[in-house]
Length: 159
Image (cartoon, rainbow, N blue to C red):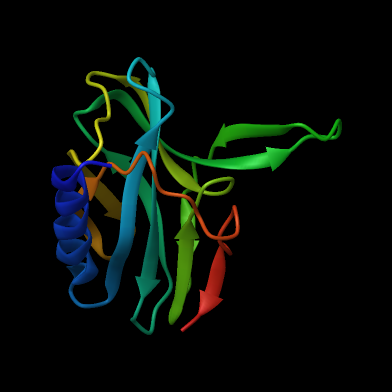
């Protein structure tokens, strides 16, 4: 990684560490996006979504101009043992007082029909739509080099 890429990623991480907030109840932290290569037609975004409120909420949609289509996806293991990605139309529940992880190998935001390549350090504008908290606009840094520590983060945990 070049010094410039490392610096951009660090600044983006520090900027997002303060988190995106919706009325102080929904917080988005540790967001990053990636694709499988410069000519990839699809990419994904991952993040921690924390519900600091007393009421359950739900991530019901995501939008971005970087792709022809943006959907909420998850992986399911079929009867033959093959992991398949699928659209989650109802979205992801974010229970009160809990954190829901969008992580590699699990729930994530899927970008299909990329209009531009995901370049290391670039920022991807995304609008997350919550059932109760409404819209949260965030800038997600592209990190093509990131490795999750245990391969797949835990999907949910209490705060």
